[in-house]
Length: 318
Image (cartoon, rainbow, N blue to C red; front, side, top):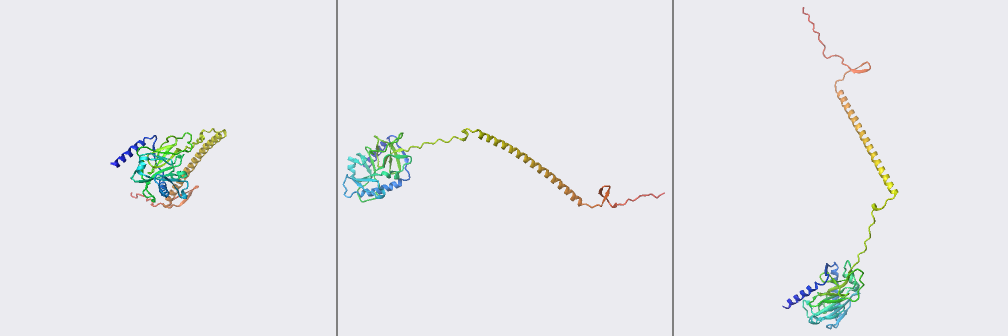
C-alpha cells in the first residue's frame, strides 16, 4: 500500500511538471558515457570527505589533479528527515519537503557537482552556448561511506519542485532567450524556461545549466551571375568575331567534305570499270588464239583455213 502511494505521488508530480512552459526533449550526444564515468569517479572522491561524518553537515571533497576546476560537496542525511524537512540550502540547490527515493534507504548521501570549465567537455550541446556552469545533484546509498562506483538512487520531489539558483550568469545576447537545460541520467536533454531570471525548476536529480542558442553567422550574398554583368564593347566585338569565324569554318568544312566524297565516288567508279575490263581480258585470253594480220593500219585476227571444205555438187547425168 505504501509503495502504491509513492508511485501515485510520483506520477502526480511528474504530470504537473510536464505543464511547465516550452518543454523540449532531444537525444543527448555520444559524450553521455564519459559523463556517467565522471559521476562514478566523483562519487568515490566525495565519499572520501567523510573522515568524521556528521548527519546534515556538508563536506567539501577533493578531486584528482586531472580534474582540477571541478567542485564537489557531499552531505549525509536520514531519509525520513529529508522527506519531512528538506534542505534549505545545499550550495545552489533548495530541496523542498516531500523528497523521495527508490529504492528506499535509511540513510542517503547527496553529492553536489560544479563542473566549471569542464562543462562543455562532458556535456557538449551543439547549437547552444552555456551561460552558467553545469551543476549536478545526485543521490546515493549512505549506509557504507567507503563504497565506490555506487548506482544512483531514483530521487524525485513528490510535493514541490527543486530550485536551482545559478546566481550571476553570463549576459544574454541581444535577441536570444535563455533556457534551463536539464541532463537526466538516461541520455536526454530537457529544456524549460527560466524562473525569476536565473532560477531553474526540476523534480528529479541530474545535471543542470543555463544555455542560449548560438547565434547563426550572417549569410554572405552570392556573387552576381555573369549574365547580369554589363558587357563591354570590346567583349561584344570579340563574341561577334568568334561567331563569324565559327560560321566560316563550318562552311569550309562542309565544302571540303563534299569534295572528298566526290573524289571517292570517282575513284570507286574508275576502279570498278578497270576491274570489269580485266575480267573481260582474262575471259578473252582463256579462248582459242587466232593469228593476227594487218589490214590497213589495223591488226585483226584471221583463220588459216576453213575447217570444212565445200563440196561442189555437179550433175553429170545426161
